[in-house]
Structures are given as structure tokens and as C-alpha cells.
Length: 131
Image (cartoon, rainbow, N blue to C red):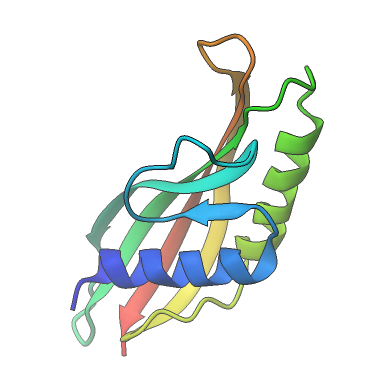
């Protein structure tokens, strides 16, 4: 069983239940996507084992994009707040694992190279033990 994949599925499931904009988890974003959307991005995983159990400490990066031309960070930052509310200190169900904790460790927003797109980046740290 792949911890990284099961974690991605769990985060996708949680976000799609809690937020309105589209969430993309695997593969590319279509060209005709609505202006506000979320992508589950890069992740890391390191061992978090004890003598009696196998565990992982992971980080997952969540990207928010607002490609609309409003000229404001409002929608992007509101969506980032909704993502925070969904994931930070949440009860997360990951098949085969008991999640000990999930916390946002950073949040950043900026204008992409096109000069129009508002881009938000959040990173969450997750600790889990195999069930």
C-alpha cells in the first residue's frame, strides 16, 4: 500500500467535500477550466517509525489559482482560507493509516508570470501510523 497515494486520495476527498471550486489531483488541468481552481501538488514523505509501528511524516502542497481578471487577491485568499479550514487540524481518513495530526505550515500568495493570475501556495504537514 502506498502511503503517498492513499494520502493524496484522502486530501482530494476531503477538499472536494468541503470546497466549491474544482480540485485536481492527478494529471493536467484542462484548458477551459473555470477561473478559480485547486491542484494538489508535490509531496514529501519520510519515515516516522517507532519500535512497534510504521509511520510517515509527509508534506503536501496545495496550489490555488485565480485566472480571472479581477485584479484582486480576494477570491484566491478566500479559497486559501477555506482550504485551511478544511485541512488544518482536521480528522483525515487515510486508508490503512491512523492520522495523528495535520497542520498548515506555510501559506504564500503571489502574481504568476503572466501578470494576471493570482497563485496561492499552502503546505500541510501530516503525521500518520500504519493501522
